[in-house]
Image (cartoon, rainbow, N blue to C red; front, side, top):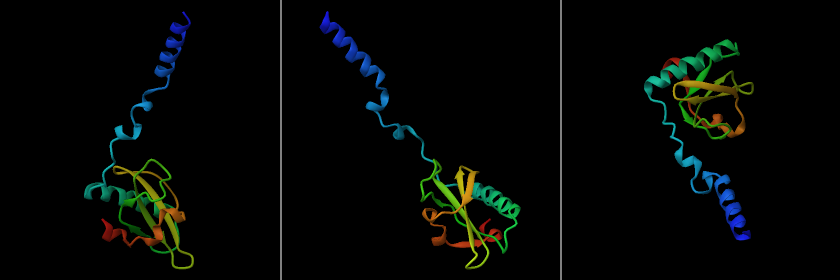
Length: 125
């Protein structure tokens, strides 16, 4: 009888431990591919609209789509925008999912916006 209880307890513990014991959850997540040319046009238009609404000083510029260096969210891709001139230059990071800007913030060092190449919004589209 004690052996049966021990066996049932171990069996219940095994079932309650979940599937992650056997499988890595990240393996089942579909990769987010780099946005294509059509998606980039939509993204740059949205980034331009957001940047213009902030009414920052200077002509805004945008970087190409790049990896999420900071890994500060589930999004794999980012676009950086900059305005102004040194030493008052400001960088913004936009986090992307497909052709959508999911969220944005003022850039942090880990975003590595300063290392990207920038062009005007007209040239980026």
